[in-house]
Picture 1 (cartoon, helix red, strand yellow):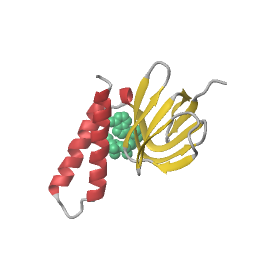
Picture 2 (cartoon, rainbow, N blue to C red):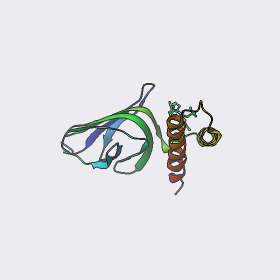
Picture 3 (cartoon, rainbow, N blue to C red):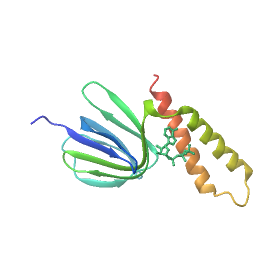
Picture 4 (cartoon, helix red, strand yellow):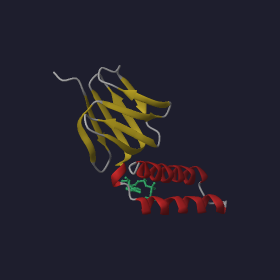
Length: 136
Ligand code: ATP
């Protein structure tokens, strides 16, 4: 049998990806880690960041935010709050989200949830970075 990993990326709305790959790079809450075929089993929470998978002919960056990844010998299952391949990221929307979050953080109003605004800013910046990385 050909050696590979079956990668599934699932969000509450969608099956974002479900196919064999050769490698997956994962932004875990305790740090980034790479998974090749035959990896030891592990369960990790995800942070907002860039998941990368490689197939024979391409490398794809995927924005992910929140959730978990379950790694077994031949399978990587990502259950994320949000997951968007770089080429499907709406750059204008992310730029607007970034401006909104920055404005909220600048206001310093009593009713602003700072942690929420920081998290939104982080998501927006990460989306913009990942979207621009496709045009290298
Ligand atoms: P916004 O304020 O624009 O909704 P957000 O960071 O609060 O941004 P999320 O809560 O992370 O958005 O995601 C909500 C849904 O919208 C998810 O399905 C996510 O994939 C999608 N989404 C959010 N921003 C973008 C974007 N820039 N491009 C593509 N999909 C996006």
